[in-house]
Image (cartoon, rainbow, N blue to C red; front, side, top):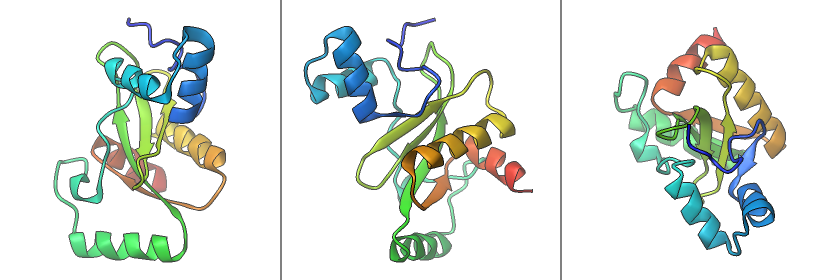
Length: 150
């Protein structure tokens, strides 16, 4: 297993927290260097946009419904987060989120993703953010959230 420099610790991570951690423990001097390190270690996946969202079967979302929902979330001043599951090539899975401005968040999961672990990670993420959010899942995380909603 690759050493992820402690960036897979059991907590909610942001790029700012990752920079602080890398600066303190690994001598990383700039945010840009920290961001490069995150990409080198494959800690963060490609950023999601509304156009990239797919359901668990890889199908496009209904754009009319998605656009309406995004507009309603923005009117209500909710933070819009796009969710996905991601695992570095030699690391454990994590629930990842990004907003439209490029802010990144991730919560490492213990073991294989499950409805319970994804729901717990999402609850931790929402508690960390501390304000109203609107979440838009992508890919396999969609199935876990569908099951959790039942």
